[in-house]
Image 1: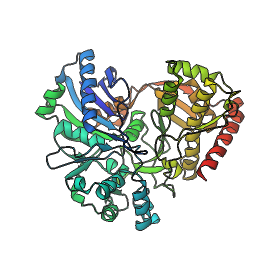
Image 2: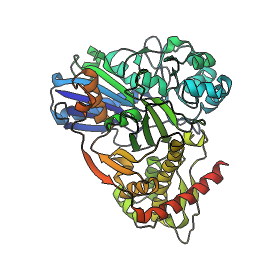
Image 3: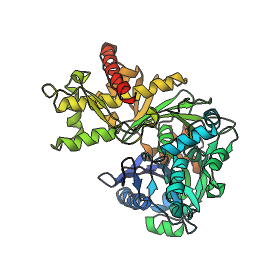
Image 4: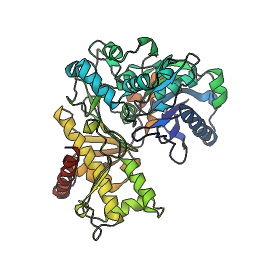
Length: 494
C-alpha cells in the first residue's frame, strides 16, 4: 500500500509517494522547475493564484505516477502540507474570489496592530497566544476594508491546504491547527476566537467545518480522481501548515524537541506542553499537529522571511551561472566575519521577529578594495544564520532552548558552511534526516487513515544522515561576527 504527500509551497509544489510498510520513497517530483510566480502589485504585497498550486500539483503528480508505475488503486491516502497564513476566499459556488494573499505579504500588519491595542495586549496573548499581527484574519480584514465588493461575496475562507483539500474532495474544511496559525483559535476557551472575529466584524459562518488534523476527512471526488489519474477510493487524511508538518516529518512531537528549515524562509520550531508566548509576539505560538486541549502540544515558531531567498537572489546577481555548491565553496574560502562585511537578510516583507518592521536587506561595511563575490556569499550565509540566532535568543527568553536541532538535509542545510556556523553560534548539535515536507505529509496521511497505528510506527524508518557538533575552536570567531552583525541590526531598527 502507498501513501501520497503534497507540499504546497510558494516556490513550488512537491509530491512524494512512499511505500507504507517500509517507508521507502517510491518517487517524488516538484513543479514548476523554476520558482512559482508571486505577484507584487505594490511594495510589501505578495499574491498567488490558487489555481497555480493545483496546476503544478497535477504536473508533479503525473511525473510521480509515471516514474513509480504504481497502480492508483494501491494508493490509500493523501496528506497535505501547505504554506502557512495564506488567505483563500471562495463564494457559494466554491469559486475563488481573488488571488490568495500569501504568507510574506505585509499589507495587513497595521490592522493586526490596531486589533492588538483595541482587544488588549494581555487578552490577545492569553487567549490567542499572539498578536493578530499580519496573519490570515488580518489579511481578511484588509480585504473587508479595501475591497468590500469582494468581501461581500465571501462564503468561506480557507488556508492554502484547505483549498487543495477542497479541490480533492469537494468539501470545505479546516483544522484547529490551521485556525490557530490564522490567529482565529481561542486557546483559553478551546473554541473559535470570537473576540477577534467580533473586532474585525466577521461572522463565524465564514469559517469552514473543523476536522481533526489526523483523520479521514473525505475522499477523492469523481471529478478530482479523473483529473489527477487517481482512484476515487483514495482518502484525504491529514493536513497541516508547512512548519508544523516539517516538525512532524522530523518526528518532533514532544516538549523540548526542535525542528528547523531554511528554504525561501527560515524557521526554528520548538514544541512545548505549556503556554508560552513572547510578549512582543516576535515569535509565535500555534497548535502543533498533535495538540489537544487535554494534552497540549504547542509549537513556538521563529520565522525569518528572508533566508534562502537571499542566497537565490545572489545566485541570480552573480551572472556567472554558478551552482549552489560552487557558491558554498567560494563562501567557505572567506574567513568568519567576512572581513567586516555584514548582511541583514530582511528583504522579503515585514519580519515578525522585528515586530513586523520591513527594514529591507542591508549591506554594511562593504569595502570596494577588500570585498569580492566570496565575501558577499559568506556574509549572506552568516547573515541568515545570525538572524536565526537573534530569534533563538528570544525563544530562550520564554523557555525554548535549542540543544539539538533536527532538519531535513535540503536547501541551506546542504551547505557545510551554513551548518557549521549555525552549530557554532547556537552551540547546538544539528541532526540531518532523510525527509522533507512532502514525505512528512505522506507519513501523516498514514497516521490519519489508520494505516499506521502510532507515530512510532510511522517514523520507524526515519534515518539520521549526519550529525554536526559545534566546534569550540571557532566559537569566539562566530560570536564576534554575530555581535558585529547584531550591532548593525540594532542601528537599523532603532
